[in-house]
Length: 69
Image (cartoon, rainbow, N blue to C red; front, side, top):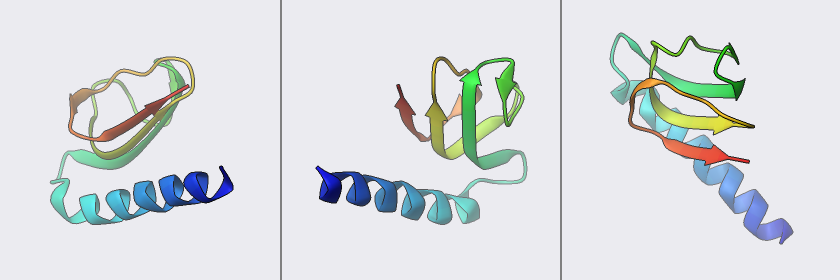
């Protein structure tokens, strides 16, 4: 279990780092959200990388790896 969590976190980190170059000028590489109004980015921002939603999250033009709890 511990190995799979570490592998998952490292995969997400690599995806985020590689997506910085591909994100473009209006897209962000990372998003952390509790619910849509309580998040790092506004829901009108694009995310191209890693998106973590603890309850619910919404973004425009989502081309990312999404993890929701």
